[in-house]
Image 1 (cartoon, helix red, strand yellow):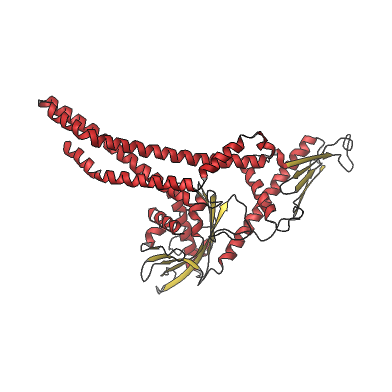
Image 2: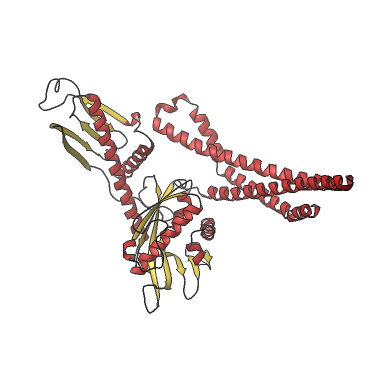
Length: 472
């Protein structure tokens, strides 16, 4: 048993090096966190949220509280990591100072069976404590690596979910199959990192995308929605044209073919900012919803039902990005809750047209104006003001969702246009499977000689993504 304990500490004379490396990583992360101004920003937000006048602007107050909560969580996570590292280090130091003396005393102090049993019990306890300390240290070191990469992500949308759109380019059937392979790789990598991933488009999520000959033309495009903290930050450098060189499974002569597929990465739930991002992963919309009109008419129970809505471009706003941002933000808020009352202006008036008793004498008609976007919905089909308000509100939500879908579609189109031709001369990353094996990122110069492992979307690809981010 003493030999086992000795091996544990000798393996841990790597423990001192491991503790030293972990402490160095902790200090580096703490310095980067401090230099980023996050703590100062958190203190300023805490003072700001204590001001009673904060809620004079509910939208700004909500945004401030969300940012404060995020910064507070980051600070608490870093403090907790500091405590874990310090606890593991203290335990290792205690074992190194006291462990050998206690083990020696336990082994020499007993006589016969009793003394031997006492020594073995002490050695077992010390070995268990050493193993626990090493496990805690390794876990803390891994968490510090994650935190270090999170601090590299300083983009406005890096913490958001990500939409990954993959389209086949030049190369025919090979390109369609290549697009499916990329979708499968990103789907598996998202699962490896613990992200939630939804797949849309033909070919399925994790199962599509082999080098088979089964109807590749049906897999010409695919889309993934990756949900999780920092999903966009991790994926934004994947945007671009990916080139594949391999023996084509669709060529009976076995000749080498080159095919292309484009990857567009957009932050999910954020408004396009009109123009590309710094990494080519996002793009702005190129058209407005200003003046777009939505109207709906339906009959119910033989009675006239009339409701209408119009999305207006704000006065004096020649570019449409502010309207797009407001539309997207409003639609995002509908996912988890209702439209804030502060964003609505409610007007009531008397219904027009022929009607029954009280139809034209009471103010039962309702007009709702969504202030951030200028969207107006009106309903006067019911005799009850409450029912008219509910119908107008439902129409307003529907209009905002449709408008946000249009903004997102234009953002994808603009991002595709920004990538340029999905063919020769535009590739960001080259995947060569024959005559040699190599993956090369043209922007950062990062390389890997094992493309097969990267395409599995596991640990190898995760390491490659880290290298690309660190080199960016």
